[in-house]
Image (cartoon, rainbow, N blue to C red; front, top):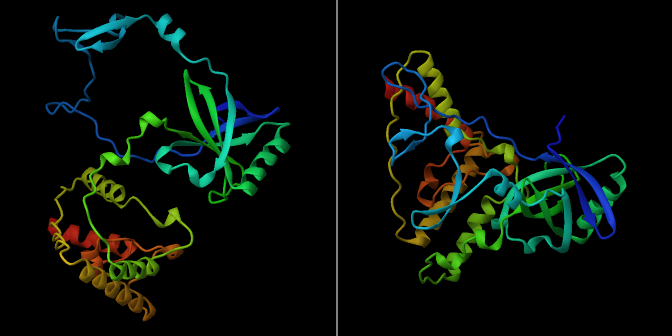
Length: 312
């Protein structure tokens, strides 16, 4: 059972909906390495040193400051920092409803699930249903943890097994860089190239996204290497893979990709080892690698023998 991390109230016109916030994501079992003293293997501690006095500064001798000019700071006391914080009202104040597709995902930050508090179930369900029916999302302001956030409320589509409300914190406009800063160059796409590209898209198209079809293969490989190291084995670098040839002729690259996909599909029909990923989702590879492409499951199975061979 999920544990609520905070409580809040959705302000919807004159309607107030008490809710509980739940984290929608969880930190993956990330692999981290610590810094040790190579002489004795003891884990090192972090210390702060004043470069002017050349001495270690303890926590109780530290103050926070803001750099308003080069190497010029104004300092603040803990009381002043506390006074500047936004008062946490825990109110999710809806400002407007906009079509869901009008918010670019580049603004998405962190996601939370909202669940109704006791007594707010009906109003909660009403808000979720009206957003689902109108295909609109709510944009709201939310003050918590000393900050003010802009958030988006949307009806969950059931992909995660629920049909309630998801709260997505959004980035402010000045936190997103304009795409115009990216140099694009000049290029013209011919209709024949577009037609081949459509065929390639159709070959690997899927109607739904199945996240369970994808795994962090790199993390699994590193974890396996760590376990081997713990077991007393040395870790050797795998043989370097050949770099794909640069794409010179776009039409030829598209044709080669289509041909490779067709061979993969025929091999699967004949009972070969090439099997499409679950949910009809194929693993994408660069155009030149398409002829050697294999599903993620087979690639992971073949990687370990090659690794052991390189170690021998």
